[in-house]
Length: 441
Ligand SMILES: NC(=O)C1=CN([C@@H]2O[C@H](COP(=O)(O)OP(=O)(O)OC[C@H]3O[C@@H](n4cnc5c(N)ncnc54)[C@H](OP(=O)(O)O)[C@@H]3O)[C@@H](O)[C@H]2O)[C@@H](O)CC1
Ligand SMILES: [K+]
Image 1 (cartoon, protein in one colour):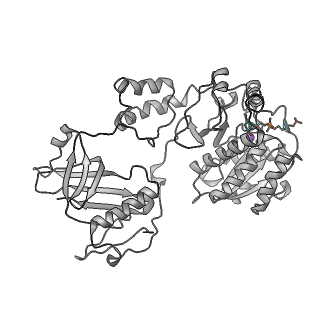
Image 2 (tube, protein in one colour):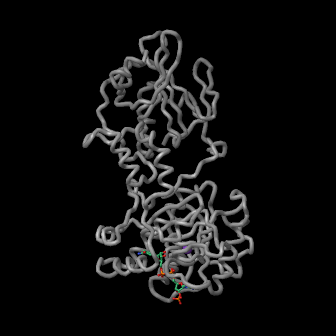
């Protein structure tokens, strides 16, 4: 397996100077642009936040009728619109009654078992958590489980998080004697996942855990929380009042923020303020009051009879994902984005003598590693006046004669590849720790 490089010195003594450019490969190649581009967009992996119907209509109008789906450019142009619209998305919110009805139908005439649904729900929670809170920065996860199925979702999520590489701790003070629950506990014990008694929890959870998952109560919650959940909820309330989210573990609520009224939300205003909510099957009415940065939907099992009976408007799940973000995508502090490019040194003696063979090896690794569109490359050309310009194109082939990519006819005229300065292409393969630069001739 080829690993990342952090420093490379070529024969002429040139060293790469940036942290993200571990390897500089310069070669001669023939440029063969083909036109027009043959493949419609977007690729199956192109991923946008959920677009409510109006947003989809906007995109559909941008594409010619019944022909091509929108190109990435068209899709990106509508991203701001769709993102804002998604905040007020027309996702169906369920009443407590409907949520319980759906539960009954799924596990009655529709043939599901509670184990199945719980497994899918818990898996959704784990994948949503992993999507937002990266393992590199959030390892220790405390899962507080209640006495019902919401607690069961928490037990399942703990198991999946363990297998994803997290270090779960489970607080499960009111165990249910049913075989489903004792089985879930046995599974966690077999993974040596610690069960923490309530009295052993520190009053301030922020020092010991990187994420706290609230799986205490779901849609059957009613009245005021009884012991010991009253204290546990208060513990999470005190956590959520620590303003600086960087100094405390984020709180992830499963289906309902525990203690909230299932339909009216945080009625007193003194309840948990989770950073993330993973609604299951469909959001409940209280989710309209959720103001945290991350709202996801999980429970990818809703069959058409349920959707049509309850008129459910739910976002499509992308690809094979078990969860989908709903609501506004939070704005990111760009300066806080960082990756540690720690990798072994790559020596000139370790690279293949033929740069095309080397490119092919790295490219195959990029595909195997699951990079999205690894054939996307920045193509830079310089016009006769010496003015450089870059654009993203898709590589469509490579052989000993050079690289082949597609551009539209009128774009081809603007490429200026007949100037003295040969064009260069650049591939970014971050998960391999690679940036490859090729000089084309
Ligand atoms: N199809 C779906 O939608 C799916 C749903 N799934 C999940 O199931 C969840 C709903 O599960 P659920 O019905 O077991 O209810 P949930 O809220 O977990 O707990 C009820 C327990 O809490 C107790 N309790 C209630 N109030 C209390 C209070 N004030 N203070 C203290 N205790 C209180 C109550 O006791 P009781 O009042 O009955 O004595 C009972 O023991 C749902 O939100 C979702 O997470 C997924 O697993 C699969 C697919
Ligand atoms: K909950």
